[in-house]
Amino acid sequence: AGLREPMAARHVRRRPLPVLLIGMLAGRARALHLPAHRWVTRRLLAPSGRVLCSRAAAPQSAAIDATPSRRSAPGLRAPASDSLRLLNTLTGKPDLFEPIDPACVKWYTCGPTVYDAAHLGHARNYVGFDIVRRVLTDYFGYMLLYVMNITDIDDKIILRTHRNHLQAMAEEILRSASAPDHAASASALRSAAASAAQTLSAPKPALRELVSAQDTLRAAAAGAGLTGTMDVCDVQREFLRLTAQEEASFFADMASLNVLPPDAITRVTDYVPEIVDYIKTIQANGYCYEANGSVYFDVSAFRASEGKVYGKLVDPSLLLDKDLMAEAEGALSAPSDAEKRSPSDFALWKSSKAGEPEWPSPWGQGRPGWHIECSAMMSDVFGGQVDINAGGIDLKFPHHENQMAQVEAHFDCCKCVNYFLHSGHLSIDGLKMSKSLKNFITIREALADFSPRQIRFLFLLQKYHTPMEYSQNSMAAAADLERRFAAFEAALAARLREAAAAEAAGGGRLEYKWGARERALQQALTDKRAAVHTALLDSIDTPSAVKSLEQLVRATNTYMGAVPEAATGGTVLQSVARYYGRVMGCFGVPTAFAGSGVTPGAGASGSGATPLQLAGALSGFRDQIRALAVAAKKGKG
Image 1: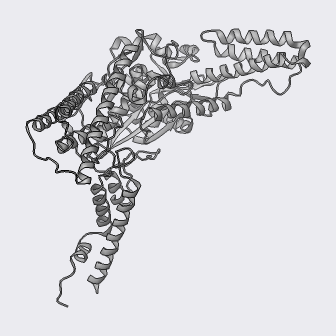
Image 2 (image 1 turned 180 degrees about the horizontal axis):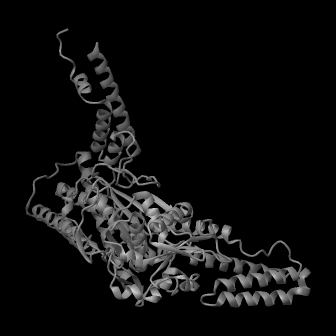
Image 3 (image 1 turned 90 degrees about the vertical axis):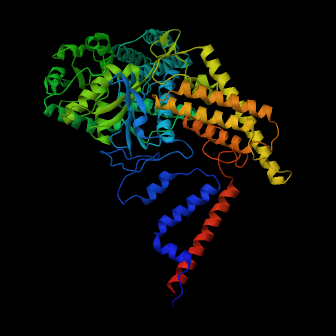
């Protein structure tokens, strides 16, 4: 009695134990220069029942309450959010970025239609937005909930499913024609296969032609006694097989390019009941009508409603572009024009025809239109308003215009998206790279010649929202710059290792005092850091930011050439390495320095601790917890 409590015991009593333990673990991590995952701390300390916004998988159901604290990357300048501007396609100018809730920025990206291999045009879109996403989170410190859809119900998918099935049938017929036991019917089988090949060679065979060719092959097979092997396409089952395969291929390609996975993925086939309910609400609000089992959005009724505007994203002249509207409705929807009240109206629900997949609805068997999928799925996750809606510039009209109108019709509101971000086209020989033009280079073909880092450099050297040309020259320039950056990283890492080795061996006294050259390098770091910051505030201007980093690389190389002694300049070189690594990490470019302040060589890749260091950290942490527990027990006694 009368004795003061031990200091450790008083500390335990004053602070909740979970807070204390997490703080100690973070302290040990900082001592080893491990990545400071502060979002983990916030998740552990969040009030019970609250869903936090993070890079972990997010819930995929109704309007998420996402309210974490804002995060800043260690060592990077984190300015006030009102200094950042994003080029907003909705207004046509750079707008101050002011999210609905700074604690969780709601971002919806229109994902791929999965029916074929992804190409560099897709990479331009998804790598570009990956860079923007990383800069917002890792540089400016925002928390994002990044949601992307997968379109797995679409006219292109239906046609490709039938095409693939017809190809498989024709190949089987030819194999059977070569078999000795079918010699009598070989001529008829080959003739049927030739007819199918003619259909397949057409630029854009219609669905009825593909189905008819399958019927012809089945009849030829039956005539030759080939039973049970020549069924026509069961599209309801086979299109799912195709989309599952292509979806997996797409995500594998994105992973190979170091594109972060979405926090939540919405797939159309998972949302058909919700889409039906969504259309029913639009119908109840008076903004659509049924015709012959299909449902169409009533643009005139929408425009007549107070405060609602159709045509926010484009020049009014484009609203009457019949080619754009027809392309958006799909190759299988041409006859529907006669059912519309106005050419501007568009399908929310399509009555299914022979050879198409179908689902039940109040209007009969059918399938969702293209635009409605994004409206319904985005609303299911976020509710009636999002901060950012992103996609390729070709989605601007009519897809994003119609998507926006549908959400506003459903919630009977006048604004559902605050910022539209559109990536520029990737062209080759002056034409947009696309599957329909057959002028594309698949991502896997590109990766056979260039590294993922070099491909990312290609897109860093262009603003994400500007059109860009792909050529041998542009790719060679990007690859050359990446090699120069890699050489710099290797040289700087070697220099820092030499300094660390010298210090560890006690072979000499390190020179900490700055001379004129060290001061000049520090000034270059200060100037280029400010230039990078200014560039990123201006709609994430990565070309200007990379140019400033290149100038910092040159200044550092000049310093290391002029001052070859490893014992000199170590502190300023460490500062350069930390800053360079972190900014490159914000761009999604892995380096020896990214994400940590360790001396290169401390870990397997220079970006973290070794297993022994981790074991030591955990062991030390455990010992400290034991000591605290003992001290707390003594304090009570």
